[in-house]
Amino acid sequence: MTTLELSPYLVLILVGFLPNEIWRALGLVVARGLNEDSEIVVWSRAVATAILAAVIAKLILFPSGTLDNIPLAVRVGAAVCGFAAFVCIKRSVFAGVLVGEAALLFGGFFFGR
Amino acid sequence: MSAPRTFPSATTAFFGGIRSAATSVFFPVIGGTYIGIGALAHDFGFSSWWLALSSILVWAAPAQVILISALGAGSALFEAALAVSLSAIRLLPMVIALLPLIRRPDTRLRDLLLPTHFTSVSMWVESLRLLPTQSREYRIAFCNGLSVGFLTAATSCGFVGYYLAAGLPPLLAGALLFLTPMSFLMSTARNAQMLVDRLALVFGLLLGPTLSLLDVGLDIMWTGVVGGTVAYAVHRLREAAE
Image 1 (cartoon, chains in turn yellow, orange):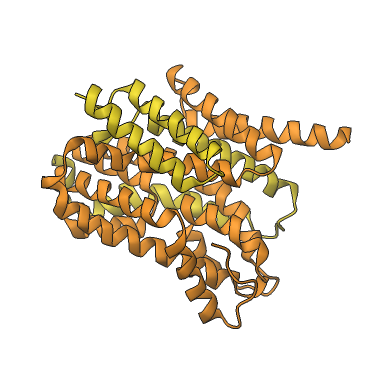
Image 2 (cartoon, chains in turn red, blue):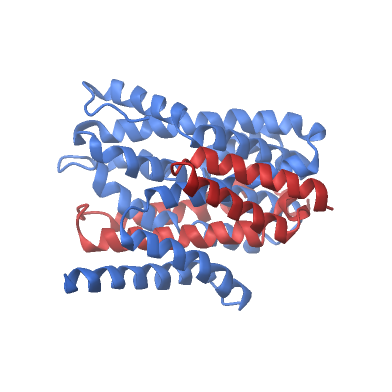
């Protein structure tokens, strides 16, 4: 905890808030004068979606925190099960998340560390 | 799930937003996620008020998980800040895509500050889904209500997870952190009605881990720029061909 001796709240501002918020602030500046049909907005949505997809894949494949106690094959298998349920059950996000979580708990119970 | 088309005032739009938050799939998902983050914060020795403030100020689950595990593991401050910032790049194009949807010609800049700060995956996905059926007048109030609803779930469940941590088995704690990628994946897929969005989703899922394994610096940013641009180019080419 040496890095936190400074002051945990100062660290929160400098290391958590500012590096995160700068992208929102930049978006506010760039979005001035754009309307929702402009091509740059369509492109921005595509870039946001691709970045989000990359974050999703990395959270599943290379997680930090307690999730890495569950083996990679179980995590990927559970994600596939969840997505299959989402597609089959009327594109319900709720059903997909529920099935994915159940598969993760099941696999983690039998194959986890 | 669908919100009324028009609200008579900003106040009713705000409470309409809160109601949409409470009935959204993200409500239980955020609750579960922040129980997981609360347990994580407890295990790494942060205070529960520090966690609550981080939820309000950072308001991005992946960034908070990175922040807590990096600081708790004793990483250098600069390294932790960089990791947080890289995970947050997605917020830039999200804000650019959201603001033109809620702004009117006479909207003042200061009225956009709150929705800008509130922009997160849950709020963005639900706003893009619900706003197009509403009149433009009170969209900002609706977005703020939606975000306040989600943020309330996050901060209160953060406390629950924090004080539950000792009794939370590791498998369950892991499963709670799995809620974020699962709900992000399926809600993005549900919202991807147009070809350009579907392609961007698939490209991002494939390109992100590939670039990361190849040790390409700024892999998340490059995935977005390359994957998103290729998806956009395909969409333009198809439009031109029709």
